[in-house]
Length: 114
Length: 113
Image 1: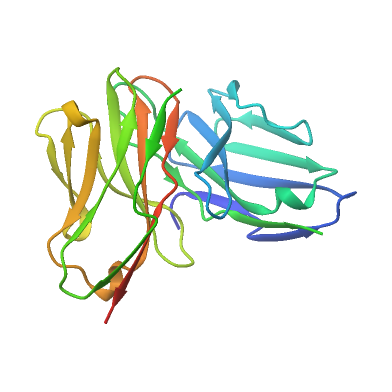
Image 2 (image 1 turned 90 degrees about the vertical axis):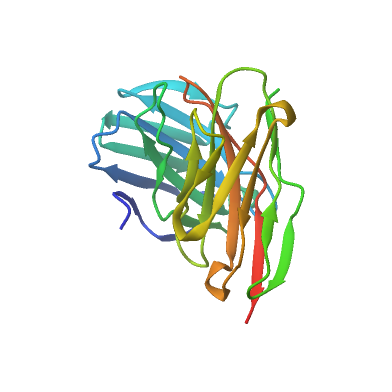
């Protein structure tokens, strides 16, 4: 385990379903991130939360809805997804600042939209 | 817009060969630089990082990287690769003091035993 735990590890959902991805960290980090990892594409930053406030939203479709109830938990709520949303969704945390020590990534949720 | 380029998408080497993976970025300000590795079926993990000081940084498992500011490059090297180095390698650039990280597209390394 990395210190960042993501559940579920695998998810198959229909286009009309609603599901949520969960991320949890107990590293004391104050920033948490959602990334999308698709084949042959760079990691795409989706959302950034710092101290439970959303600080970045990279033009992500509204069918993805993040929630950060506290500094240790981050959710990604999914509804009416499309097949092209199938990907590995990665959560990461960090303690940003001038001396940035990089991310700690979770193992990801492999999402398949059918 | 800032970007990170990894020129080699697939690299195949024999064991004991030397490795160099290229990474170039476009950003004129102060940056923190990282290499991450993703072994098959595993999560992304930090291989090494550069903030300041000696431009030659050493990471885990015998990897090193050199920051050449004038070339906006941060190439990853290993003198002698092993079969267990088979993985995907990602270069990432962070604008210092911000949350913004930009990742490259990754390089898949296959080491033949």
